[in-house]
Amino acid sequence: MNDEQPATLAPKFGDGPEVHPLSVVDPAATLGRNVKVGPFCTVGPDVVVGDGTVLDSHVVLTGRVTVGANNRFWPGVVIGGEPQDKSWQDGPTAVEIGDDNQFREGVTVHRGAEKEDGVTRIGSRCLLMANAHVAHNCHVFDDVTLVNGVLLGGHVHVHERAIISGNTVVHHFTSIGTLGFVSGGCRVVRDLPPYMLAAGNDQPQVRSINVVGMRRLGVTEPTIRLVRKGYKLLFRECLAIGEVRSRLLDGLDVIPTEVATLLDFVEKRQGSKSGRGREVHVARDAAKDQLKRDQRAA
Image (cartoon, rainbow, N blue to C red; front, side, top):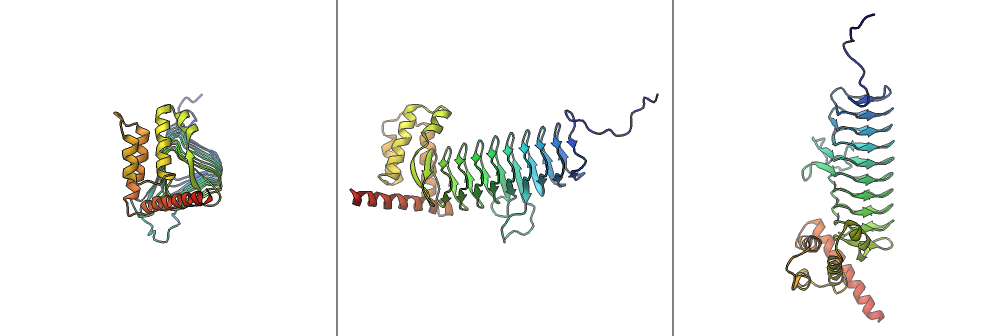
């Protein structure tokens, strides 16, 4: 009996990575501990995959892609494809993904174009449902849910715990604020401030605040009432942000984080000359038009 071990051993799942023989993993790729690569996957040379991540089957990781720990990629996912941007010059752009995300069937995430910092970012604990698309230079923060068929144009920012419902298209340079909620089938061309709920055919309007989301997060009822008051001042009375801030904070010794987040989001974008700033003005104009229609109807 020969007790001598061979020079190399096939890695075992539970220690090193396990790669199915029908997959192609470039020798220069970096796979962490307990990574599992199922059949018919392709992993490029500039890819780093963190511990415990699973590629089910037919998954493509290409270009400069860094993936954190304990992510799961369902069949047909493509991460790091070239940006659909005519200005892209084959530069060293990238995709960066955090931990504990789920990418369901057919999800695509394109790496950045050379604009901004050249990176498309996905945070941690996000759920991207089937056939969702994240374009170049997007920033999807932590705990975000993109429902089936959501399409994010380039440079879109989706902040923490936001939910974008199925088959919604988000125009490039648009921002969805923290805990924002967009109903299904919308065409979002204007910023949605934090804690707001947008709905409506085609282009959605801000309809109310995301009470359910705030309560699930443990936001106190007094703070929810303040956010509701801010919503009414901004989108029903259509007051200037300075007046809203003055009325909302009058008599407060401590400003709740949620209120400060809402006011800062609106103030920064209204004072900006960027696309995001213009989008807030468009939203305000739409609210004013609706107010005039309501007054005429009354």
